[in-house]
Length: 84
Image 1 (cartoon, rainbow, N blue to C red):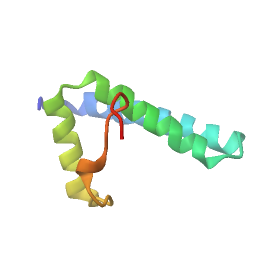
Image 2 (image 1 turned 90 degrees about the vertical axis):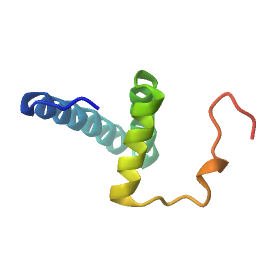
Image 3 (image 1 turned 60 degrees about the vertical axis):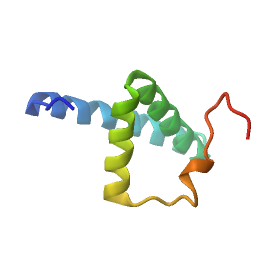
């Protein structure tokens, strides 16, 4: 993955905070915290759609390295166009 300059990284974090704040405000204003989670899931889907599969795998791998994986079986998850 390409390296970020300090300026790029600062701007990326600023934009991430904007998305997170908007999602949080949506949850608070609607009195439904599920709205916040849904907004964040939508933002992550939009980001993943714009990354290559290799980039998405790198993001997911780095995330689970830092936070652990709280799923029973990651292979159980299907895409939006697949049947369960």
